[in-house]
Length: 446
Image (cartoon, rainbow, N blue to C red):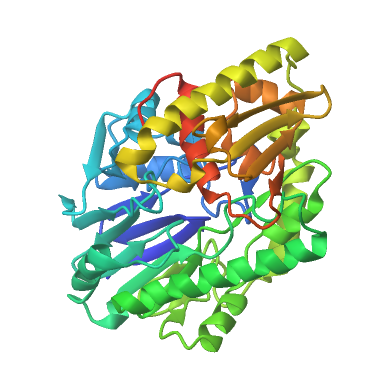
């Protein structure tokens, strides 16, 4: 029988006999320039690296290339001969990043799957939602495990049928579905358009929808067990403590209450980082003791501050700021490059084509710089505007390529104003996220 240990966030250690798979490793490197795992990792990296070195059947699975799922510093500790399993993406960014770390045995798994040790591993990508994130499934001789990570949206069509068919090989109580139960973007928390009260209402409504849709997916494939994960994190942004507290994880009781309210069929596991599940019962890190989740949050915050970890976050650093002229020139290049990246890809990919006609603005009030671009050209402008405002300190580093654009949005390093107020700028955000990595690395491996 498989054994599942929740390490932190979306990292679990799956064990079947002497075979191990560690998913999405992340330690204390700030993801998106501000995120830390909350609570911190329950297994120090040293123990996991020692396990990898002492066991030839130890592997790592990485769902996608966000820093809270792919921690370069942590991964660089592992032997370069460790097998690393990733989805088979059209873009080679994740593979290239792993090769730069030094890994020699990278396995790309398609929807058809690959056999590795005692596991049959498959990946599923919904290209209409994201071109760089995937659900991964792990079939063992005894169990079926879905590592949905950030893919909480409803699974439909061919992907759903394939996952259902694989899950159906097992009794319902041998199937575990693990999925995101928290927000992982800037809406509404960095939007100038909303009051703090409105932000709280919108935030909670979005989280509730994510949780319920995740459990709907678990119901759809016939899973009995559901694990609340991929939300054990909080953002540390200077002067904005509300972001840290509002965005931290929801308790299993909260998740279970939604399960009961919406009449989902799954059983929500009462498991937090440090606990294990063997498809029969949960064993707490301290057997027989259930830790208070609010205390876990507050002590996590205190730990990162006491040990001065927050100094590594973007808004606590001081960078070399460009002059007004330099920043203006770099922003012009960045935005014209963005338009050149997006426009020829809209027709062939049919991906988030509603970005056409949008005006995107970047501004820095502290050094009075503002630049804009309209996707499709001035004649295409339809009145929709998204303005991202940040500091010259942070924007200079983004223009240098030392910091990724997503640090502004997912890492809360910017504020956003939309016109009209309630328009959805998902298309802008997704295209900027893709372009941000291309810009940062100075090449187009998208």
